[in-house]
Structures are given as structure tokens and as C-alpha cells.
Length: 329
Ligand code: TRP
Image (cartoon, rainbow, N blue to C red; front, side, top):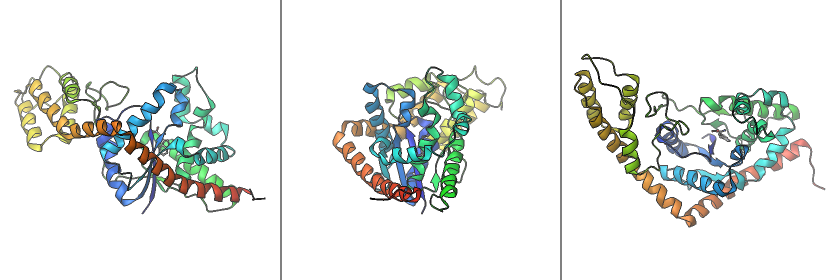
């Protein structure tokens, strides 16, 4: 049994790509490990969300994960800002994080380009806060994608540095959680690239069936195959990739054959695809609405989650302060 920590961005709603690429793996993982799933709402402050939006964003993302089947009675589900111990460890780790290495972080350099008017110290120390999130529970596994690989490497480094500095074997160095088989990448509906929240090419779990139909019917295709047996173009191939995940194999086979014989009508294919997406994620969308409306349930989830997370985090803080040399009077 491993201890797993995963932080979830509190901006942006979940789309099909997140669902099949990540969240479905979390569902299985939660039964096999000691999992901490939290909403990284302190991290989100680096981009200065409006006070009027912050809570609703957090609530929506939390509801979406719960609707997918993250079980708060199995995993520890909490909000980062409900666990002040994390910020205490962040402060302590900052003393051994060097400005040079933080400035060299890829994500920081990217932010400098993207938001030159808001290069705040929170952005610079983002990897330190993330390391605190992870090692405060002495996690050994972190299920992150390639875009977070450098942050995880820095987490390992900060953990190792603490151990070396104080001559202890205290923090484990966490590894990436390996999902075994290849991760599923869901392409977007715009013909190129993967589904993303900012690309405007996604189907969101919270979309209504009508919205899903509209988006899928507008998906990019091509003018149709010209010669029998022709390979599908990228946009059409992408639709087949999504179909492979949501539709019955016989449906995929039917439309592949239609394509190979140049008889395919993309309108029919998209209609079918939309219905199959709705069949799979429609119930999740319904559940999201129910959970968002159930404040009592959400309040219970976050308060029980915070209690469990703080039990683990406060033990670490006590031991870390002891190691650093703080003594009670
Ligand atoms: N940086 C992560 C992301 O952008 C979110 C995150 C914050 C995280 N703290 C974490 C992920 C701890 C894993 C573990 O997706």
C-alpha cells in the first residue's frame, strides 16, 4: 500500500480527456492505496482569481471529482487552504530552496512569458508549495502527467536536501505513479491536438446533452475519402479515437467500413458519437448538478477531509520542527 498525493487545479472544469486520461485511473487507485486528493486552491492564487469566483470554482471542481466516483469515505478528499500545516512546511522548505533553481524551472519561465505583469513570488515558489503538499503526507507516489515531471523532480530534490541537511532519513522521495498500460490521450474536436480546457475543443462533463450534441456536430472533419481504403485524415482519425473509447466496437467497425468504402456520412457518425458520449458521461453531468446543489454533503466532505489531512500533516510538522531544532520551553 503506497501513500499517494494528488493536487487538482481549482480552475477549469473536467473534460472527456481528463476523465478517460486521469480521473478513471484515480477511481481504481483509491481502493489500492492511501490516497490524498486535494483541490490546490492556494496554487490558484498565483494567477489572481477574483474573490467572487474563487469559491464557486473550488466547489465545482470538487463536485466534479466526487461525481466521477472519487469516494471521500475511501480517499482523503480535502481543500488545500483548509490545511494550514501545508503553508508551514512551505515556509520551512523555502529556506532550503534556492532562487537560482526556482528561476530555472520551466513552468516559471513559461509564466514569465505569459503573464509578464504578474511575476509574483508565489509563482517562483510554486514548486516548493507543491513539494510541501506531497511530502507533508510522506507520499511515495504522485500521479502526474508529463507536464508536472519537473515539479516532481524538484519535490524529490527538496526531500533529499532536507534529509541530507539534517542527517535523517525522514522524507521519502516520491515517484510518479505508473498506471501500467499506456495513458489514453483524447483528441479535441477541432481536428488537431489533444483535448484541453483552454483550446475550446472539449466536451465537458458538466455539459448538457444539448451542448454535447452541438459541439460534436460542429467537430472538424474533411470533404470525405476519395479512394477506397484511404487512411482517415487527422480530424476524422481523432473522431474515431474518441469513438473507440465511448462507443460499442461494432459501431466503430461499421463507420470504419463506411469510411473505407467511401460511403461514410460524417453527420451520421457524429450523431452516433454524440449519443454515445452522452450515454457515458450524461449520468456524471446529472450527478455534478445534484452534488453542487447539496451544500450539506459538500460541507461534510471537506470538513472530514480536512480533519484527516490535518491529522497526518500536523504529525509531520511536529517531527520536522523537532528535527530542525525547535524545542518546547
Ligand atoms: N501543479 C499541479 C498541476 O498543475 C497541481 C498540484 C499542486 C499538485 N500540488 C500538487 C499535483 C501535489 C500533485 C501533487 O496540475
